[in-house]
Image (cartoon, rainbow, N blue to C red; front, side):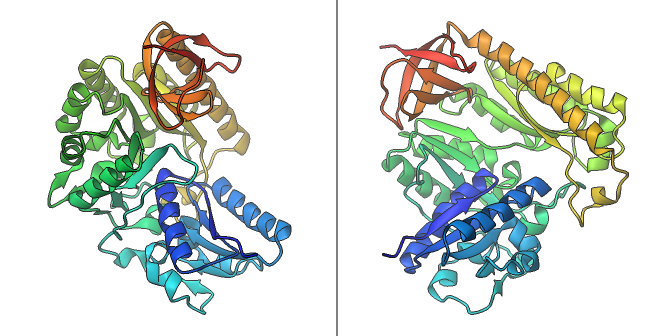
Length: 414
C-alpha cells in the first residue's frame, strides 16, 4: 500500500511554514512513498544532521524516494545530488511551485538562480501537521548579508508578501482553530511593501482579524525595530511580550567584523525602550561564541551583555565557518576555545532564565496548551499544567512553582 508524501524539516520557522506548502503540493500531485527533506544551512552541524537523516531514511526504508530541498540544497545542489540515496534535488524557488510537483522533471537537479527572484510565491494553508501554533511567511530573503552568514545565498533577495494575502492567511488559520500565529521570514523587520512595513502589518492584522488571540514575532534585527512596533508592544495585549533579537555579539569590533548594523549600546537602548513601554517583556537573543579574531576581552563584553540588556532566552551558536563567506577567510580560534566560550554563554543564559522563571512564580499567565499537561506562556516559557486543558486552546493559570525539570507549574484559574 502506497504511503502519503512526508516532509522532514530542519532549521527555522520559515522552513516549517514551507513544509506545509510542499506537503500540500505533493499530495495534490499524487506523490507517494516520498520524503522531502527540507534542509538548513545555517551551520555545518545543521547540514551534517540532514545528510545523516537522508542516509538513515534510505537504510530503514528501502525503495523510498528521497527529494532534497531547502537552503543547503539551494547553495550546493551537486553535493546532495551526488548522494546515492537522493532521487532529486529541487531549489528554494522550485519547492514552493505547484508545477514542480505536477510536472515532475526528469532532471536530477532542478535549481534556479535564487538571486533573480522578485516575488514571493503566495499560498493559503489551513493548518500545520502536529503543531498548535501556526507560522505565516511574510517575507523572504535578505539584502544585507553578514560576513558569517550563508543563508542569503539560499534565500536572496528581500521580498515581501502583500499585506492582504497575509491577512487572508491569518484569518483562515484562526478559522481553522489556531490560537497563536507567528510571523516569520528570513528578516521580518525588513518587511516592506506598498502597504507599509512590519509595524503597519502588525497593526492591520490585529485590527482586521479581531478573533486572533495571540500574535508572535520571530527574530528581529535591532536596527530595524521602529517606534511603531514599540508602541504596539505597549498597546496591544494580543502581541506577545517576548521578542527575540538578532544580536550575534556584544563587542563593537566583532559586530563590525560581522558586518552587523548595530552597536552594543543600540541593543541595550532598545531593551530599555521596550521595557519602558511593556515592563514585563522577555527578551531573547542569538549570540555567536568564538567569532574569528574574538579576544578574551571581546568575549567578556558579549557575556556581560546578557545582564546589561536583561536577556533571558539565549540561542548560543559556536562559530561555524561557512565556505564562501568572508568570515571563512578570517583568523579562526581553536575549536576548544570556541566551545568553552559557548558553554559559558549557555551557563550565563541558563542563570538568567532561572531568575526570570523564579520571578514569574505567583503571577498569572495565559498558556497555549500544546499537548496533554504542557503549554507555552505568553513569555515563551514552557509550563506544566495541573489538570486537563484542551490542546490548542489558551487557558489562564496561576504559576505556583517549578517541576523537577525546572519548568513552571500552572494551576488553571476561573
